[in-house]
Length: 328
Image (cartoon, rainbow, N blue to C red; front, side):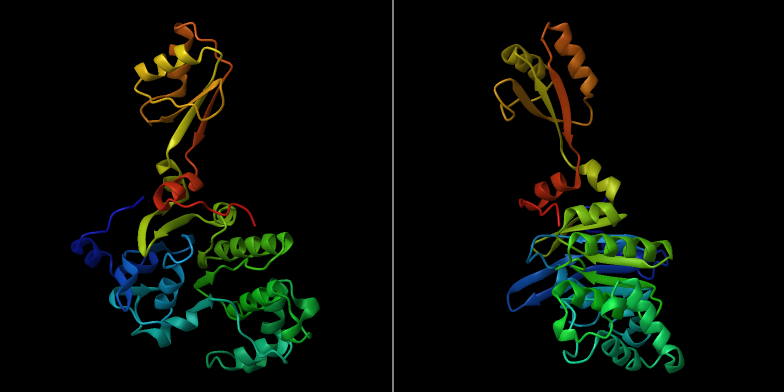
């Protein structure tokens, strides 16, 4: 896991890395005097499902807009699929599917007609296979039954699905999704989750911004955490979880005696779990088994011991100081 900015030598060496679908070095965006994105160094491996996490206003959408050439960067560099952006927009964007800040459609055209128009606007597509391509995209997102319904009558969740279908009209090497489950019911959320997995299985790199921790933990292989415009951590999910602080909770009627034993082991017990419980941060160097052994040797009656923490949520709270929505 990386929580510090690379040196200039590291940045130069990583430029054009064939193993990365997205690479930024010192990427920054300033609005007047506010640094919305403050020198971030993203490294998104090809074939990964990368979760882009952070509280509202942390700079996630601004970053995505710069990656796609929708907004110019104030500083730093961007490489997408091995090419410099925005210089290579014309060659890169046809290989990238995106759903950013909610989809926009012609309200009085059907879902099918909207996708046909978007497909026709792509100079790289074949008109002879357009009908089949549109039908396949609608089927993948579960909208075949509403394909001929006017877009203005679509629910928010249906519009999200239609936006995903638009991003999937042609095979993509990279899919960039900003809050893809926004407005979806639990069934729709599961379907999008399964869709992301199937795309990753086919070799597509998926970069997904979300505030739903459960979604990130269930579908992502890697993640990055943003706070006030800074990338404060990134790595595999296992790396990030291991960086989260662990705690140990000891339940015993002999609270005073147990506290003395825990302090002797270098812990700082506190009464966070009830009158018969002591809670302490657990360093990696101290095994829970050692705590139990020392308590038993001191004739402390142990009713139970629980090790907690080490989760993505713990790390997020520790890094940002904010809570996280953990369910849809």
